[in-house]
Image (cartoon, rainbow, N blue to C red; front, side):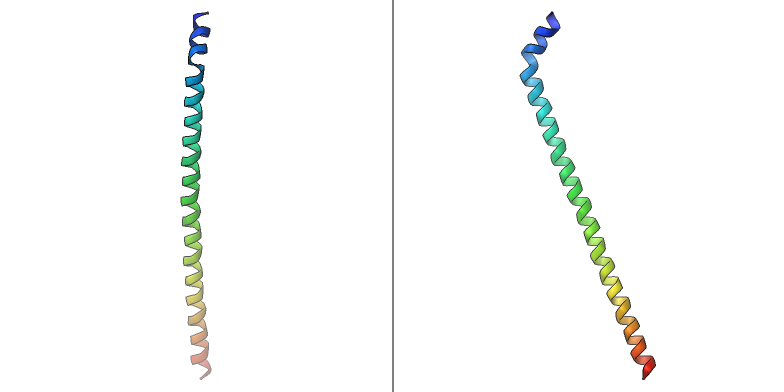
Length: 67
């Protein structure tokens, strides 16, 4: 019965601690996801720039070969 009494007295503190820990993890997870998505999106932009450069080179080569 001593354990039940201790848990009964500490229940609000345990619940509050659990909620704080869960909230902290949710914030960490969301922040980590944002960083990952930002890197992925940036890599997509870099790939688009490279693709555009390659197309321009091909077009310039075609123009010079037709002349």
